[in-house]
Image (spheres, rainbow, N blue to C red):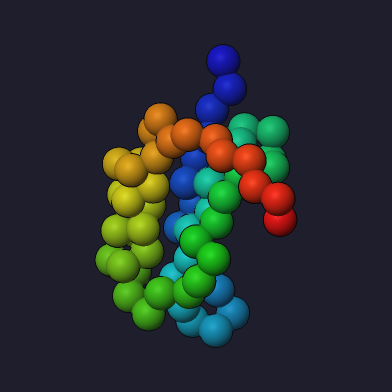
Amino acid sequence: MSHATFELYEDAAGKYRWRLVHDNGNIIADSGEGYVNESDARNGIHSVRTNAPEAATVETDD
């Protein structure tokens, strides 16, 4: 069974970010933006956990 871990960190600009890292070291997802407050970054992690456990896959022409 594989696992992933959310990492919460402060970037070089002093903003908080998160990334979801597979146990093989690959980054699966990231916050895409820096947050001024650590609590806002934690809320982003919570949102992903809550809103995407069974997210559908949609193909696009992009």
